[in-house]
Image (cartoon, rainbow, N blue to C red):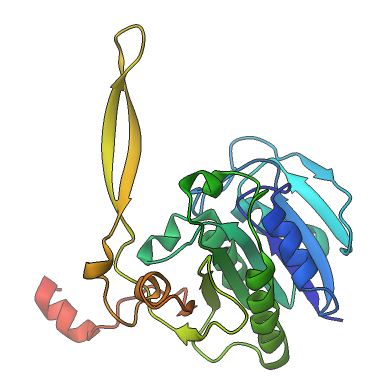
Length: 261
């Protein structure tokens, strides 16, 4: 049986990770290693300056499940050290979409990227939410039925056929109002998803403190063919092939001349 790793950045208690386990039943032996706590926007962070603590947890339908007091990337490294390699890695189902080149900020996408660097075909899957408060909860009010359907469909195809040459992982985003008849489309990453800024506030002692906030790019500036356009405008499921080699596709000889090397 194939070995399947499931992780996330919403934490071991997120309903999204339980939904992923349910979606993949029968496709292989499932192992779950996820953070003990919410770790959204942790990116490729690793825990290097303190020891990690792991707690085995009971979870129906899996071979083994652990909660790790670290980051999503730590969870992938722990899984490989404890259980060896895997045939497929799934990160999600995340609460809130992860799109554009900003996926490098996402703990969800970064866990899949980490698995891909070890040669494991990987899928990051996120479910769009229509209320901001849902992004950092456990998913109590969210219906994962459609996301589960598409996760199983894509995971089954990857297990049977692998990923095409040049593709290391897939970044999947499911609209909150999608159903099983919603079309899927292959997309590229949008340039960016948010316009970030700093909001200054004053605490009761008169000392300023700061929040990083952001507004989502308006629909009218989204470029057709990108993940954001397909999800936000066309209301389709976006599947973006990712290659972890970020080397720019340029003429290296021409770049040498440009830089005077």
